[in-house]
View 1 (spheres, rainbow, N blue to C red):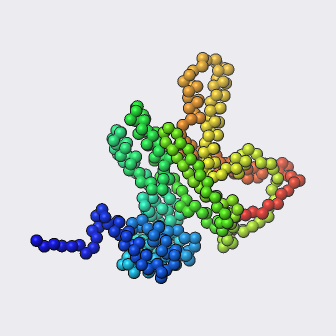
View 2: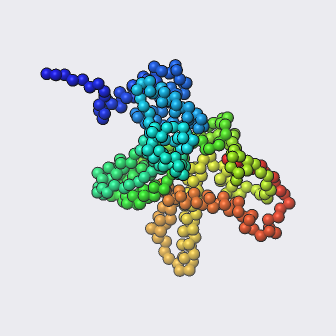
View 3: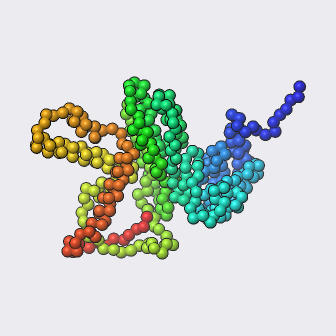
Length: 364
């Protein structure tokens, strides 16, 4: 009997990811004295099996990290290829044969959309998105469970949407529950985008940072969110764009804050403001329905219906849908536009004001 031994690890074996990860980390340990601490920590904390995801504050630092990573990994026999970046300057510093196939030609005006750990990354706008292809499976509990489990969301961005399906699946085990409404709402996720970087461009130096948390729970499930807050320095735009002025002095009418501006200015985050606006719109619809019913009863009195009252109460209850979030966003934009454009729409005699307030515009 002849005994053979593999000289390399088998591709696809259960132990292969662990072996590759061990070899990569050992390579970083053996050569960390020749490179910076940042390069060592990038290998130890930013590699996901064979994928590297790193974010740098400047293009120069990104190019330096690319060069150091290739050198340190080459010492262990690792050849890093298929590089991708949201900066054309960084891509230009990488040889063409080492770039991803979608960015071999840098003459294109728009950077492509890549897949990173199951999420679609639009390099041009630096946002995360999703491609929803709804599978054709039977409308049974087994088919619904297979559909819910088919969505790969490692960052938990789609948790509010997937949670609805899981709740429906729980109800299906107890009673007959309709779920086609969730399927129709799911198809609107194709246009959903969220920023990859928590720090906006040209945000300035962070002098103090706070991490705000919010959590809520019920009998059906629980949810939590966290967002960073820097209340001090919002930074300035550079004057590279001739169409953008760094600062300017303008005159505006001095007005007292109304309920709308207080609502917008005092919200701790954009997502919280969206939720508050949804509940305000629901209350508006609830009050309008009561007012319409009173008008109709005044013209032709009808006996009170428990079904109509239950329908009115239902307007102010239930989970927030994606359609309501989009409507809330549009209403906030309309309110902000009206606050700014109201002076333009008013006649000249109403725009005069003795009290003039000069403000320094800060570009964000």
